Length: 597
Image 1 (cartoon, rainbow, N blue to C red):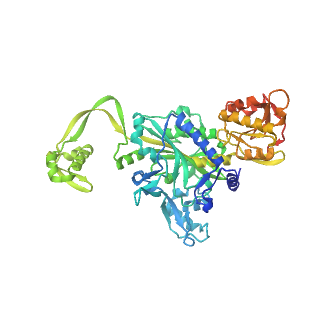
Image 2 (spheres, rainbow, N blue to C red):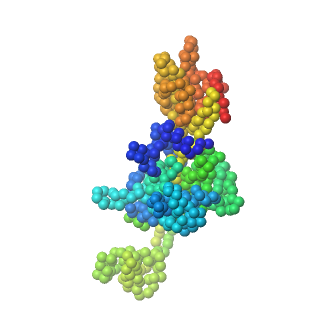
Image 3 (spheres, helix red, strand yellow):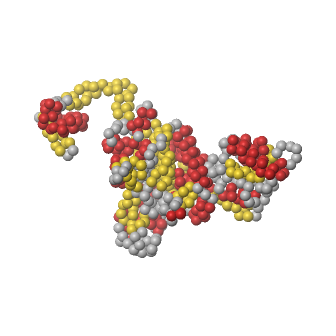
């Protein structure tokens, strides 16, 4: 297991990620993914897209990262998207108060769920000090700090806008058009992969908590009365769960079960959330997360987002701590209802009945020739309010007068002028607001998890070796090609030809002729390259077919095979159709001193 400082040093040295804007002193909370990291991140995104967009039959969009203020008024982010801030009176440094509690008080993992008052009490009880200058924080107020990045759209003061804190809002806002592409048929899903922004109080732990990050999200729109997930596909998927009941119990423990059993026993309340936990479990196994250091934890009531009826997190163990790497929320109809209230569009779908039905409906047909002179410009709004009242409370029209409120002002209308009646109408369907199920993945945190879970050490040729045991699908480069020595034109020529043939086969290749062959192997091991091809003199001697050695990263074992077979065998292994051990049964081993410790 790698210590955090070791992994951070490796990430910087080998080009996975490093702090941004170093030439100007750096900017906290922003990281640049280097050549290796950008490739690994891209592979994570591609694997997610393959599973959650392609295989599940969903559509993908790409929405702007900046949206007008009204969007976030509707979504609730301007009022409820806060973290707890405590400021040091001595040095003026701001800190995330709940994180100070979690770091200092044993047994508290989710201080955010405790609330501001309790966090203030804990700071006093444990005499917590400022991590920057050591001054006492007891008695300092803990305040809610909104995490939204504000900006201006257009010249001058312009139109107020915000950097999106999640990709989800871009999907919700476009729902009226997206439902047309889905032909108004539920269920349907929309995915998006892209950046999101949160003005974190105290970014920390490398790319785990940053101010700009990449999300991969799916919004599944369903009819809550009719649509059921295909649970049969994941019934037998084994999962490790940490329900809220176990977290609150003195002797609480994990629950090892299957998705089917968890739903049947009521451990996971929403079948849709359970379905996506099963899909995610298999996806995390696919990309190479160590499943012995992985769990699904249910949110406690105090930490659930304002929109979530229930929420589970996928968590990975990193350097002895559990971090959230994905969230699975049943958002209900909160989002679409709110945007429907605040916007001028319809965020519903028309649900057609199997057979038309006849219903009694209260209607008003106001005499506008009377309303107009009496109420002037408010007449149309009064008429609309009368119809809304008729829908909600028909008995209000039984008297001689009826009163409605418009923009906080009361208007009284004679019932004869309102022209109220109850009519029979035939309806072929109704407008319903879909519910939303959301799996939301943190791409950067998944990258960090793969790096730490993949970090290993052993002994090769009498030396300690560190390497990244990344799944071939995730590795930044599929194969490295080396001439054994760089000053032999024949070896270089064949190595160049092999590199070209592999690239033509769609395999990502790096060519390296710098330094000793041992150092070149170590460089590739450290960035997780699963296979190395070496062109040596032995493979070019004689009258038979030219051969090369193929080395597998984790075992550091080598086999010798014909040049003509290299591309095909690598394609089969990278596709998961063949293992390196199977190749070892068909080709000759190459002697090497390998000791795994």
